[in-house]
Amino acid sequence: MRGFFDTSIKSVCNHLQTFHDDNEKYGITVALLVGGFAESPMLSGAIQENCSSWKAMVPDGASLTVLKGAVLYGYDQSVIVYRVARYTYGVKVRSKFIDGVHPEDYLVFNEEGERFCKHIFRTFLTEGTLVRHNQIVYESKGSRPFDSKSDHLNIQIYASTVKDTKFVTNDCCFCLGILTVTGLDTSIPRNQRRVDYTITHKGTDLHVYATDTRSGRKLNAYIDLLD
Image (cartoon, rainbow, N blue to C red; front, side):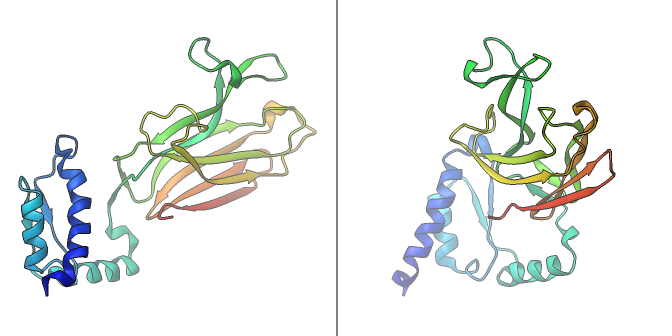
């Protein structure tokens, strides 16, 4: 009978072992087991054996905990007060070029001759950070196109598996989504074509809200963080 569950038990233990082996980083002392498999003494015993410095605990009603949580969340997403950021999240921006810090390959000039570095990863949420439901995690005032002929602005959201990420071109980065604000008035100076935007954490999504400050036109986009 035990052999029927060996593969599942081994998979769970191998996953937990990665945290147990690096416990100085995570500081875990208890493995709280919930779900239909939680009440199996074979599973709790295997976890206790493989992760000996932890205490494996099975609360009363453990088998229904996940189901109850799903029902509660379906009625009211705000019941989950905090979530832990899975990745480090940032926006793609240009910033003033710094000699010796930024790669020469990323040097670009605007129409006024000012030097900028492209492909910058500007972090707004770091992996492992606790983030509240409906929390504004990033706000930008007065973003504008890089050249005078442009009638749009791209807001590009990235994620990274590395906390201290500098550039969106790094192998650890991947693009989550792009919100393009189009229809900016090219008859006015570039520095007057401004877009304000915020990024808000809502449940399992990032919501991007953008406003063309000239026309008052509003746009939004939702980025699913579960993918």
